[in-house]
Amino acid sequence: MKKLLSLTGLGLCLSFAAVAQESVQDTTWRISGENTLLLNQSSFSNWAAGGINSFAANLIFNYDFNYKKGLWSWDNKAIAAYGLTRQKATGWRKNDDRIVLNSLLGYQASEHWLYTFYMNFNTQFADGFQYDDNGNSTLISTAFAPAYLSFGPGFAYKKSDNFRFNLSPAAARFIFVTNDELSNQGAFGVDPGATSRFEFGASFDAYYKAELMENISVENILKLYSNYLEDPQNVDVDYTLNLFMKVNDYITVNAGAQLIYDDNTLIPRQENGVIVPDSERPTLQIRQVLGAGITYKF
Image (cartoon, rainbow, N blue to C red; front, side):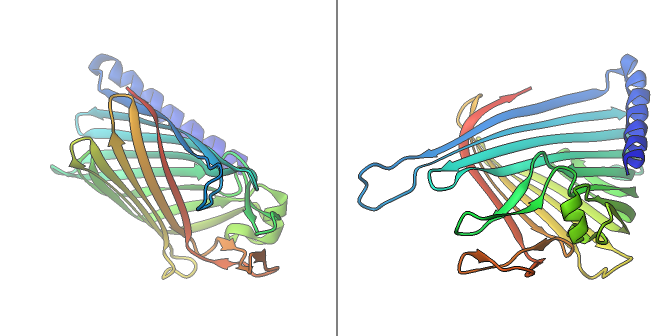
Protein backbone atom coordinates (compact mmCIF):
# COMPACT_ATOMS: atom_id res chain seq x y z
CA MET A 1 0.00 0.00 0.00
CA LYS A 2 2.77 2.44 1.02
CA LYS A 3 4.63 1.58 -2.18
CA LEU A 4 1.54 2.34 -4.26
CA LEU A 5 0.99 5.68 -2.50
CA SER A 6 4.67 6.54 -2.93
CA LEU A 7 4.62 5.74 -6.65
CA THR A 8 1.43 7.76 -7.12
CA GLY A 9 2.90 10.71 -5.25
CA LEU A 10 6.15 10.45 -7.22
CA GLY A 11 4.25 10.42 -10.51
CA LEU A 12 2.26 13.50 -9.56
CA CYS A 13 5.41 15.30 -8.39
CA LEU A 14 7.25 14.49 -11.62
CA SER A 15 4.26 15.66 -13.68
CA PHE A 16 4.03 18.84 -11.61
CA ALA A 17 7.75 19.51 -12.04
CA ALA A 18 7.61 18.94 -15.79
CA VAL A 19 4.65 21.24 -16.29
CA ALA A 20 6.07 23.84 -13.89
CA GLN A 21 9.32 23.86 -15.85
CA GLU A 22 7.43 24.60 -19.05
CA SER A 23 5.41 27.35 -17.34
CA VAL A 24 8.48 29.34 -16.31
CA GLN A 25 8.49 31.06 -19.68
CA ASP A 26 4.76 31.17 -20.24
CA THR A 27 3.51 31.99 -16.71
CA THR A 28 0.43 29.87 -17.29
CA TRP A 29 -0.29 28.97 -13.66
CA ARG A 30 -3.32 30.41 -11.88
CA ILE A 31 -3.15 29.92 -8.12
CA SER A 32 -5.94 30.92 -5.75
CA GLY A 33 -7.14 29.94 -2.32
CA GLU A 34 -9.32 30.59 0.70
CA ASN A 35 -8.47 30.32 4.39
CA THR A 36 -11.62 30.34 6.51
CA LEU A 37 -12.25 30.27 10.26
CA LEU A 38 -15.93 29.70 11.11
CA LEU A 39 -17.32 30.29 14.60
CA ASN A 40 -20.72 29.42 16.04
CA GLN A 41 -21.77 30.05 19.65
CA SER A 42 -24.95 29.96 21.73
CA SER A 43 -25.34 30.68 25.44
CA PHE A 44 -28.32 30.60 27.84
CA SER A 45 -28.75 31.81 31.41
CA ASN A 46 -32.06 31.69 33.30
CA TRP A 47 -33.76 31.21 29.95
CA ALA A 48 -37.36 30.04 30.39
CA ALA A 49 -37.49 28.20 27.06
CA GLY A 50 -34.35 26.26 27.93
CA GLY A 51 -31.29 25.61 25.79
CA ILE A 52 -27.79 24.14 25.74
CA ASN A 53 -24.64 26.24 25.74
CA SER A 54 -22.47 25.34 22.78
CA PHE A 55 -19.46 26.52 20.83
CA ALA A 56 -18.10 25.39 17.47
CA ALA A 57 -15.02 26.31 15.45
CA ASN A 58 -14.07 25.15 11.96
CA LEU A 59 -10.86 25.82 10.05
CA ILE A 60 -10.94 25.29 6.27
CA PHE A 61 -8.16 25.61 3.69
CA ASN A 62 -9.28 25.48 0.04
CA TYR A 63 -6.61 25.96 -2.65
CA ASP A 64 -6.66 25.73 -6.46
CA PHE A 65 -3.59 25.28 -8.67
CA ASN A 66 -4.62 25.46 -12.33
CA TYR A 67 -2.38 25.30 -15.39
CA LYS A 68 -3.15 26.05 -19.05
CA LYS A 69 -0.81 25.95 -22.02
CA GLY A 70 -1.93 25.39 -25.59
CA LEU A 71 -4.25 22.39 -25.71
CA TRP A 72 -3.13 21.12 -22.29
CA SER A 73 -4.70 21.97 -18.94
CA TRP A 74 -4.11 20.67 -15.43
CA ASP A 75 -6.56 21.55 -12.63
CA ASN A 76 -5.68 20.76 -9.01
CA LYS A 77 -7.65 21.34 -5.81
CA ALA A 78 -6.54 20.73 -2.23
CA ILE A 79 -8.95 20.95 0.72
CA ALA A 80 -8.08 20.49 4.38
CA ALA A 81 -10.79 21.02 7.00
CA TYR A 82 -11.15 20.32 10.69
CA GLY A 83 -13.78 21.42 13.17
CA LEU A 84 -14.74 20.93 16.81
CA THR A 85 -17.92 21.56 18.75
CA ARG A 86 -18.36 21.71 22.52
CA GLN A 87 -21.38 21.25 24.74
CA LYS A 88 -21.30 21.08 28.52
CA ALA A 89 -22.80 17.59 28.65
CA THR A 90 -20.63 16.02 25.97
CA GLY A 91 -17.37 17.98 25.92
CA TRP A 92 -15.42 18.44 22.69
CA ARG A 93 -16.38 16.46 19.60
CA LYS A 94 -15.35 16.96 16.01
CA ASN A 95 -17.88 18.12 13.41
CA ASP A 96 -15.64 18.22 10.32
CA ASP A 97 -12.54 16.28 9.28
CA ARG A 98 -11.42 16.15 5.65
CA ILE A 99 -8.34 15.87 3.48
CA VAL A 100 -9.20 16.06 -0.23
CA LEU A 101 -6.83 16.15 -3.21
CA ASN A 102 -8.27 16.33 -6.74
CA SER A 103 -6.28 16.47 -9.98
CA LEU A 104 -7.50 16.54 -13.59
CA LEU A 105 -5.13 16.52 -16.57
CA GLY A 106 -6.86 17.45 -19.82
CA TYR A 107 -6.13 17.70 -23.54
CA GLN A 108 -8.51 19.89 -25.59
CA ALA A 109 -10.61 17.89 -28.06
CA SER A 110 -13.00 20.72 -29.03
CA GLU A 111 -14.17 24.03 -27.64
CA HIS A 112 -15.52 22.65 -24.35
CA TRP A 113 -14.58 18.94 -24.45
CA LEU A 114 -11.35 17.39 -23.22
CA TYR A 115 -9.66 14.01 -23.07
CA THR A 116 -8.72 13.58 -19.42
CA PHE A 117 -6.93 11.61 -16.75
CA TYR A 118 -8.11 12.21 -13.20
CA MET A 119 -6.92 11.39 -9.69
CA ASN A 120 -8.83 11.77 -6.40
CA PHE A 121 -7.58 11.12 -2.87
CA ASN A 122 -9.64 11.42 0.33
CA THR A 123 -9.00 10.70 3.99
CA GLN A 124 -9.19 12.42 7.39
CA PHE A 125 -6.94 13.67 10.22
CA ALA A 126 -8.29 12.11 13.41
CA ASP A 127 -10.39 9.36 14.98
CA GLY A 128 -14.13 9.36 14.32
CA PHE A 129 -16.67 7.96 16.79
CA GLN A 130 -20.36 7.23 16.99
CA TYR A 131 -21.88 8.16 20.35
CA ASP A 132 -24.98 6.83 22.07
CA ASP A 133 -27.16 8.83 24.46
CA ASN A 134 -25.13 7.61 27.43
CA GLY A 135 -21.90 9.05 26.05
CA ASN A 136 -20.46 5.67 25.07
CA SER A 137 -18.39 5.81 21.91
CA THR A 138 -17.61 3.37 19.10
CA LEU A 139 -14.62 3.92 16.82
CA ILE A 140 -15.82 4.03 13.22
CA SER A 141 -12.95 5.74 11.35
CA THR A 142 -9.49 7.28 11.71
CA ALA A 143 -6.63 8.65 9.59
CA PHE A 144 -6.13 6.43 6.52
CA ALA A 145 -9.03 4.27 7.68
CA PRO A 146 -10.56 4.83 5.30
CA ALA A 147 -8.49 6.46 2.60
CA TYR A 148 -9.72 6.45 -1.00
CA LEU A 149 -7.46 6.70 -4.04
CA SER A 150 -9.05 6.64 -7.50
CA PHE A 151 -7.75 7.42 -10.97
CA GLY A 152 -8.44 6.71 -14.61
CA PRO A 153 -8.80 8.04 -18.16
CA GLY A 154 -11.97 9.68 -19.41
CA PHE A 155 -13.44 12.78 -20.97
CA ALA A 156 -14.72 16.06 -19.58
CA TYR A 157 -16.98 18.97 -20.43
CA LYS A 158 -15.73 22.32 -19.13
CA LYS A 159 -17.82 25.40 -19.83
CA SER A 160 -15.85 27.44 -17.26
CA ASP A 161 -14.14 27.05 -13.90
CA ASN A 162 -17.65 27.21 -12.40
CA PHE A 163 -19.26 24.49 -14.52
CA ARG A 164 -17.61 21.23 -15.48
CA PHE A 165 -17.95 17.47 -15.25
CA ASN A 166 -15.70 14.49 -15.87
CA LEU A 167 -16.66 10.90 -16.74
CA SER A 168 -14.20 8.03 -16.49
CA PRO A 169 -15.63 4.67 -17.68
CA ALA A 170 -12.44 2.82 -16.63
CA ALA A 171 -11.63 4.06 -13.15
CA ALA A 172 -9.53 2.15 -10.63
CA ARG A 173 -10.20 2.74 -6.93
CA PHE A 174 -8.27 1.60 -3.88
CA ILE A 175 -9.80 1.68 -0.39
CA PHE A 176 -7.25 1.61 2.44
CA VAL A 177 -8.02 0.69 6.06
CA THR A 178 -4.74 0.88 7.99
CA ASN A 179 -6.23 0.65 11.50
CA ASP A 180 -6.05 -2.94 12.83
CA GLU A 181 -9.31 -2.75 14.79
CA LEU A 182 -11.30 -1.54 11.80
CA SER A 183 -9.44 -3.82 9.39
CA ASN A 184 -10.27 -6.89 11.50
CA GLN A 185 -13.93 -5.86 11.38
CA GLY A 186 -13.84 -5.72 7.58
CA ALA A 187 -14.78 -2.04 7.68
CA PHE A 188 -15.42 -0.09 4.48
CA GLY A 189 -15.65 -3.24 2.36
CA VAL A 190 -12.18 -4.72 2.91
CA ASP A 191 -11.89 -8.41 3.73
CA PRO A 192 -11.50 -8.95 7.51
CA GLY A 193 -7.83 -8.51 8.36
CA ALA A 194 -6.97 -6.90 5.01
CA THR A 195 -5.72 -3.32 4.77
CA SER A 196 -6.90 -2.53 1.23
CA ARG A 197 -9.57 -3.27 -1.34
CA PHE A 198 -9.40 -2.85 -5.11
CA GLU A 199 -12.35 -1.78 -7.25
CA PHE A 200 -12.70 -1.10 -10.96
CA GLY A 201 -15.63 0.78 -12.38
CA ALA A 202 -17.02 4.09 -13.63
CA SER A 203 -16.54 7.48 -12.00
CA PHE A 204 -18.48 10.70 -12.53
CA ASP A 205 -17.51 14.06 -11.01
CA ALA A 206 -19.42 17.32 -11.48
CA TYR A 207 -18.98 20.86 -10.20
CA TYR A 208 -21.32 23.84 -10.50
CA LYS A 209 -21.08 27.23 -8.79
CA ALA A 210 -23.55 30.05 -9.34
CA GLU A 211 -24.18 33.50 -7.92
CA LEU A 212 -27.74 33.67 -6.57
CA MET A 213 -27.54 37.41 -6.01
CA GLU A 214 -24.90 39.96 -5.15
CA ASN A 215 -22.50 38.55 -2.54
CA ILE A 216 -24.41 35.25 -2.27
CA SER A 217 -23.23 32.16 -4.16
CA VAL A 218 -23.97 28.45 -4.05
CA GLU A 219 -21.59 25.59 -4.86
CA ASN A 220 -22.54 22.04 -5.85
CA ILE A 221 -20.09 19.11 -5.88
CA LEU A 222 -21.24 15.64 -6.97
CA LYS A 223 -19.22 12.41 -7.09
CA LEU A 224 -20.58 9.05 -8.24
CA TYR A 225 -18.84 5.67 -8.47
CA SER A 226 -20.04 2.27 -9.66
CA ASN A 227 -17.89 -0.83 -9.07
CA TYR A 228 -18.08 -3.18 -12.07
CA LEU A 229 -16.59 -6.04 -10.02
CA GLU A 230 -19.30 -6.18 -7.34
CA ASP A 231 -22.91 -4.90 -7.30
CA PRO A 232 -22.47 -2.24 -10.01
CA GLN A 233 -26.09 -1.15 -9.44
CA ASN A 234 -25.14 0.10 -5.95
CA VAL A 235 -23.74 3.50 -6.90
CA ASP A 236 -21.69 5.34 -4.27
CA VAL A 237 -22.91 8.94 -3.93
CA ASP A 238 -21.09 11.93 -2.42
CA TYR A 239 -22.88 15.28 -2.76
CA THR A 240 -21.86 18.58 -1.14
CA LEU A 241 -23.84 21.82 -1.14
CA ASN A 242 -22.12 24.99 0.08
CA LEU A 243 -23.71 28.43 0.48
CA PHE A 244 -21.43 31.48 0.76
CA MET A 245 -22.71 34.86 1.95
CA LYS A 246 -20.18 37.68 1.81
CA VAL A 247 -20.50 40.49 4.34
CA ASN A 248 -17.31 42.27 3.28
CA ASP A 249 -13.85 41.33 2.00
CA TYR A 250 -13.05 39.40 5.17
CA ILE A 251 -16.30 38.45 6.92
CA THR A 252 -18.49 35.65 5.54
CA VAL A 253 -21.41 33.48 6.58
CA ASN A 254 -21.08 29.91 5.32
CA ALA A 255 -23.55 27.03 5.36
CA GLY A 256 -22.86 23.55 4.06
CA ALA A 257 -24.37 20.09 3.86
CA GLN A 258 -22.77 16.84 2.68
CA LEU A 259 -24.66 13.65 1.87
CA ILE A 260 -22.80 10.34 1.43
CA TYR A 261 -24.09 6.88 0.62
CA ASP A 262 -21.57 4.06 0.30
CA ASP A 263 -22.80 0.47 0.25
CA ASN A 264 -19.53 -0.68 1.84
CA THR A 265 -19.61 1.75 4.77
CA LEU A 266 -21.54 0.15 7.63
CA ILE A 267 -22.87 2.34 10.45
CA PRO A 268 -24.07 0.87 13.80
CA ARG A 269 -27.79 1.27 14.46
CA GLN A 270 -29.19 2.85 17.62
CA GLU A 271 -32.36 1.96 19.54
CA ASN A 272 -33.56 4.30 22.30
CA GLY A 273 -30.23 6.09 22.15
CA VAL A 274 -28.16 2.90 22.64
CA ILE A 275 -25.87 1.40 19.99
CA VAL A 276 -27.09 -2.09 19.07
CA PRO A 277 -24.25 -4.65 18.86
CA ASP A 278 -23.68 -6.25 15.45
CA SER A 279 -26.25 -3.96 13.84
CA GLU A 280 -24.00 -2.31 11.25
CA ARG A 281 -25.66 -1.50 7.92
CA PRO A 282 -25.21 0.97 5.05
CA THR A 283 -27.14 4.19 5.56
CA LEU A 284 -27.25 7.79 4.41
CA GLN A 285 -24.54 9.89 6.08
CA ILE A 286 -25.31 13.59 6.62
CA ARG A 287 -22.98 16.40 7.71
CA GLN A 288 -24.12 20.01 8.21
CA VAL A 289 -22.09 23.11 9.07
CA LEU A 290 -23.27 26.70 9.66
CA GLY A 291 -21.18 29.58 10.93
CA ALA A 292 -19.94 33.10 10.52
CA GLY A 293 -16.26 33.75 10.28
CA ILE A 294 -13.18 35.28 8.77
CA THR A 295 -12.08 34.43 5.23
CA TYR A 296 -8.84 35.43 3.57
CA LYS A 297 -8.70 34.98 -0.22
CA PHE A 298 -5.80 35.27 -2.60
